[in-house]
Image 1 (cartoon, rainbow, N blue to C red):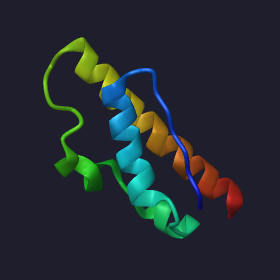
Image 2 (cartoon, rainbow, N blue to C red):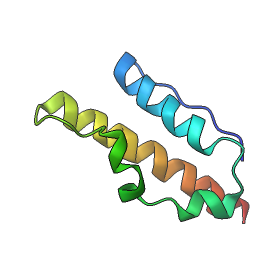
Image 3 (tube, helix red, strand yellow):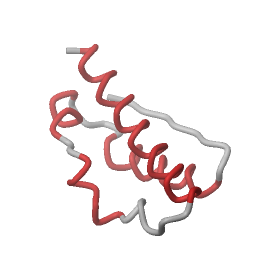
Length: 74
């Protein structure tokens, strides 16, 4: 699988880049094996601010989109 991601926010863009870095080149089955909890150590949800919540949503949405693409390929 090959991935690209982008965001208006520089911080969210960095989080998206991390997901691309982790999953770009993975097999579809490997992408589908990733659970949100597997990525908890990256700490994208730190803080209780609205911005932090929005960034966490972006992170999860990008992961969901990557996994949807993997399912479609299979």
